[in-house]
Image (cartoon, rainbow over all chains, first blue to last red; front, side, top):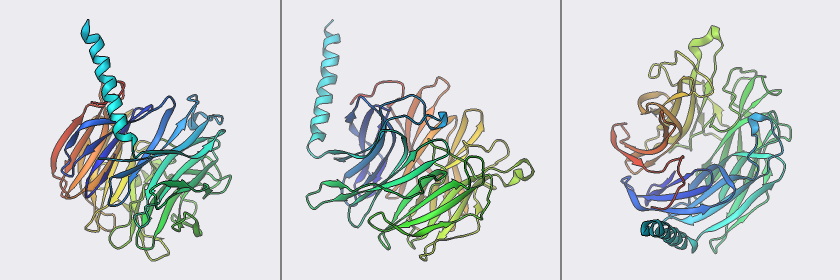
Length: 91
Length: 331
């Protein structure tokens, strides 16, 4: 979740494959619609976001993995991963 | 019979409308491609002066060697982002555990902090800071914030934040937090500490302050799951922190802590009773808005938003019907 103090904010969530968002006004009330922002065949990991100042533009970045086996705790070093970004206007 | 046709059709229509609404202004791009190693924790920091965005991430070569990269996404006059070539902040064979990064509008710079093993997995851990200019280039050399040879700092490898740093408060000062894992003989020293970083261009760390006592009873297990999760600077010069405390195997309670301008604990409220994942929160006008994922005994995940006054009096709790166990779809 990331919020713009002046305009309200935007809540982001991902289940590892889909990225969805929902507007929140500055009193914390949720907007009526949940937007599907990204529907991807690859897995989305470690998402973070920030708002552009004085606007409703949201910048999201995540790690996208194409090989789900293992992980850093498992000592695997052959995963294919990429850092990706996405910008949208949260209206 | 008809409802089996109508429901998917309505869902598809809503999905189409939602995508169409967002299609006009969105931009998607690759920031860094790596076909060999894992890229893990990602941080996104907006430069409030220029609108540029600095993206930082950890490149995991093997359990010992991790590198931190940053890439500047430069905002053009047309409103498009252009990704500059990624820059490695650490050495190629660094023993980094975790990192955080924040923007300082006072001098248009960024402050990166990271903890790293001295000589590889199992050796003492130290915390470093590194100042970056507005282009994401290092200014000077890394500054060690902890006494050399400090042991038992929480060796977080990935997945959970280990050393969050708050964005600078009104005076430009930072606050950093970390977990100290005490050996048996020093059990009373275990807990979550803050270190106040005074902004004077030198980022000298203050004496670490145990914020948890006496508000949080640290008796019991203080391990990888007892962590400061996130820090924010409040408009009054103080700070707010979310903190997760392990209460047993796979059991965690989350707290929201009000901190003074030097990182001293003032008050706390519980956020989640059973088990929670990472908590994200911000100051929203005169409210603190906290979002958290709770896991219940059934394994079912649910997201909550809770609103607090700056005094930590709870205003409202909202349940968000997004789950980690069901496919997400627009409502």
